[in-house]
Image 1 (cartoon, helix red, strand yellow):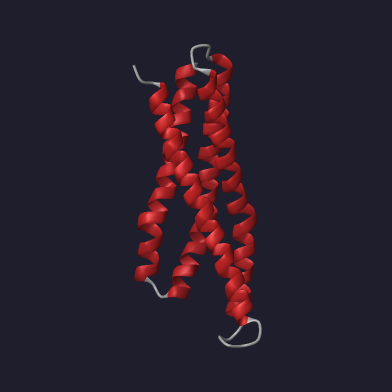
Image 2 (tube, rainbow, N blue to C red):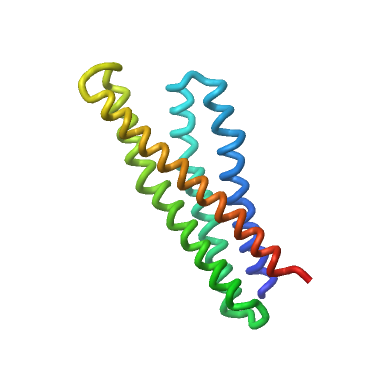
Length: 161
């Protein structure tokens, strides 16, 4: 049974971190380099619900599997179980906040911003607000990526001979 949960844990973590890495380093930059800014924003807006859903599924599966492994394994050191579970809880919490709280708010601001002409009253305030939300989202995604890479390292360290 532990082999199954270990597989789900590793698969979820690998797919999630791979998804974040791909979007940040290849997908996002290519979209904004290839398309006009407004159209690129529309494409990203269409992609993000699935992006965050996939990450939530992968992260949730990794977390549930990590908890299951903790309960059935007597040979895994407790420091690793605590670290793995804590990192996954933080990562998943950040991910859910970014995808299901921050993203809809940013989308709303972006939609409202598009109704205002540049230089009109309120435009610069909304633009700054969207920029702040975007920056926070990028920082959260970067944090999830870094914590995920650290978790891959600690997982490998735990399985060394």
